[in-house]
Image (cartoon, rainbow, N blue to C red; front, side, top):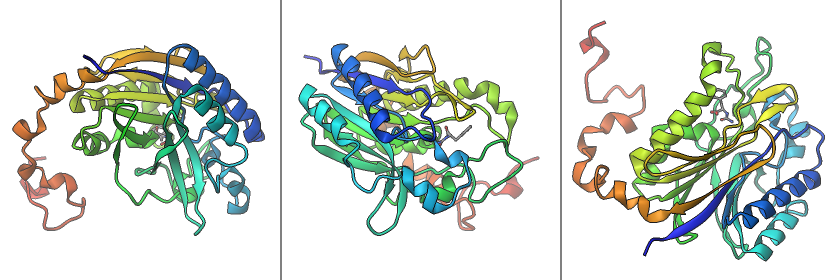
Length: 316
Ligand code: ING
């Protein structure tokens, strides 16, 4: 008998710099209610879903801290937790985390259908730059505002399956999916804020949607897992951000995708046993992987002792 789970990606349109959390939470609750009405038991919200994507500006920490959460749930987010528990719907929510001992992370929380917090994740791959670069039409100062998460990617038993989490840039790195794949992940929650313009190489702008689909579909297929990815899209404070929220099957097929760049719910009924059709055949890791030959993957890039062909051996 197959295990089925109704899931939703709850895409957000732009959040203004001065939009109060309370107003944003009302939008999240509205999306959560629609997802529930359409059969979802797990709703995936975007990265930094409570505020505008503030790393686009160079601001004093005292200013930027207004967009960080010191508690989750806090007064402004409690209505979302309460409505979800009432409807018995779980969710994944991205937010900026300020810890008691002063650490700042780009985080997400996974909440079960009874309102309990399953786990918290802190973004591993922090893109962008550390200091203001005036040549850019807008900044991407995530490396100024956030520390990289200290923990690796985890997988937790929840929603009747094995659930993993990642945030935005994490989805571009195959290691993110494989670390979860090696833990038997069956459904990965992901939120993202992706400006379409990539200042270091504008030739990539036109490929923003293709690259988004490429990495989500490859990661799903190569690890036999569902991937549910929710965007904050549209033109937010003058910056056009990719929407294209997607639900991807273990086969790599896109089973649902957003049509707009605004608040929008997409849903899918996920056959969780579809995962094993890939994990126990083509991607039977125990039978076919050759980890003894993959040492370079975890060697740090400037590791002098790393094995494998050195640059000298590679013909130009
Ligand atoms: N955003 C981007 C992402 O990886 C980026 C960084 C922007 C990459 C534009 C490429 C082009 O989707 C976050 N928040 O990681």
